Image (cartoon, rainbow, N blue to C red; front, side, top):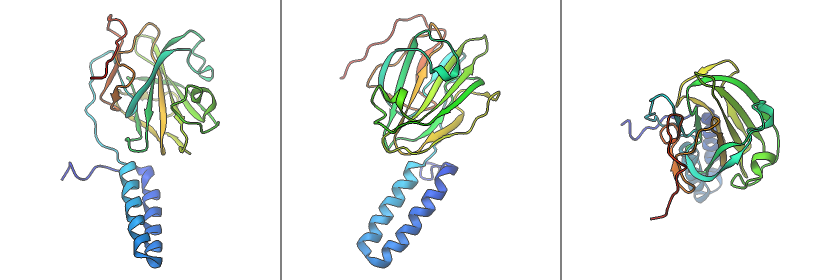
Length: 227
C-alpha cells in the first residue's frame, strides 16, 4: 500500500479540491468534459506528490535540492541580494518540468543565514537569463566549519508561486524539505568556494538523493557522455 499511496504536499490540497469541484461542474454539461476533468484532477494529485527519499548523510556531501535534469554547469557569483561576495563559484542548475516532483530539499546541513525574495518575469526556466530576470527566492546557508552555500528557487514559464517554508536562523539537515515551486521551474546551487561539481550536464537528479558535490573530494570536474 505504501508504494501506491504517495504522500501529498499540503500546498496541493486546495488545488486538488478546486480541480475536483471543476470536474463535478464539467460533468453536468458533458460526460466527455467530466472525463477530461478527472484526468486533470489526477494530474494535479500527481504533481503535488511528496515521496519519501533516502538521503546520503555522510559529512561533506551536497545533495540535489530538486528533481530534474542538470541543464547547466558553469561559474557565476552568488545572487547579490545574499551578500556572499562577487567571487565566481561553481553553479549547478537543475530544471524541473511539470512531471517532476516539485518539493525542494536542503542540499547540505547548516544554518539559514540569508533569505531574499525578488519578483520578476516568468521566462522559460531553462534559459540562462532566467537566473537574473525571473521571480526567485534566494537562500544562503552557513555550514559547520564556516563554509557557505547558496541555492535559488527560480520560477519558470508557467510557474506562478514559489513556496519557501524556512526562516533565517533555522538549522536544517541535508534532505529536509524547505519549499516547492508550482508548475515547472528550476533550482540553482552555488557550491561552497573551492568545491567542484560531481554531476554532468544532461544527468537526471533526484532531490534528496543525488550527490551533486562533495566538500571532501579532490577529483576534477566530471564529464558526461550519452550512451
